[in-house]
Image (tube, rainbow, N blue to C red; front, side, top):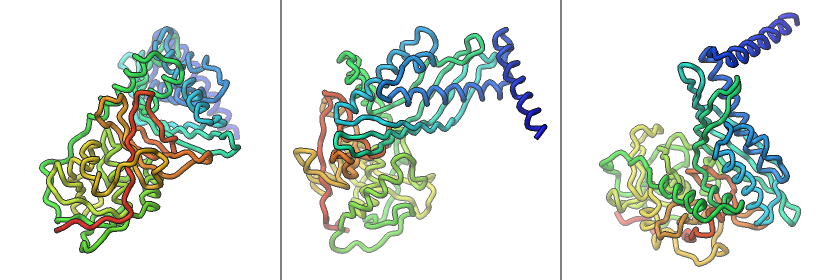
Length: 390
């Protein structure tokens, strides 16, 4: 056991040397500096998640930031707003778990600043007024910038996209201008979509009904009617909402792409047509997405709505008319442009509708995202549809 004690003493000495070097302005070795920056970013994201608990002190969260950072105030408001928003729908948060995966860490040549890219999956357990408990989750990509002050890494900025930010800021009492600014940022991000490989490769007139959810396209005869399998659509959504199916392309704004995948997993046939009017995804017989092609309605919210409505979905006036395998569309600012879509996957322990989604990756989240300005459109998926005419 002696080697363990020796190793521990050596590690402690290296840590002390690193702190001393930082204090006198000597840069730590790049690998070591990147490692400590990564640990700081991980600790910050964990602290940020724990700050959502009722009664949690926000001092630890604020102390993660560089002195005077405006984002320290904003992140404190978001953490507090998360708890208040939960209370507003009868949820008391009882536990929070945050798992952080560092994607990359880069340190400046002189070692006084760093950028850490990380993915954080936060699972929240809450108890409802009826005593039942439920769990919901979110997966968010963060780009965290840090500076070194007196041997300690401090956060100067955290760039990320969370569809719940306007809701949390509004619950925390932020001004309408701040809330609308956060909502407009979501709208801007929703339009940044990497286009499909163009032009759309010719696809056999009717891409299949009932492809295995994880496999490549295998064309089958299309005769009669397709029956929607809402349980299969829900199972697919639950499986891939916090992770991504590696056999499909992924996008910076991935909500419509994910909704299309869930609808297709529910055995709805693709819709023949051109790039703007077909609902198509072609894997070209392989499981790799590198050569995949698709049409615009597969990945774009407004185009998807236009193709699905009246063919696969019917508008409903209230959320209570929806069920598992249906869809909700979101207009973040109420400007008439639909920005987001999520799949209804059932209800929670309090009987409230919950959704799975991508862009911000959500698992079993309370459906009413957005602020008081957000508008919603409810789409019920038909149980049976005629197969496309060849």
